[in-house]
Length: 76
Image 1: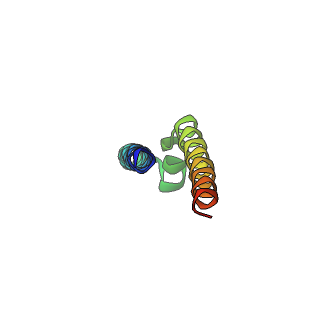
Image 2: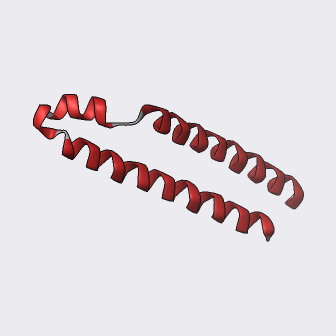
């Protein structure tokens, strides 16, 4: 039961972080739209934050697969 609560908590935190990053990026691009959409999109996205979110997604998938494998071994 604790594993399910932990999984739900990690999922919600990760989803919230992604949503906040998307909103911030859209606002930054919108404010720089006078230089052109392509250049605003290149300079508006904060790449270190994007890489941290992608790494967190990868870590979440690894944890989820390990937990699923452990649960399937326990039920067998």
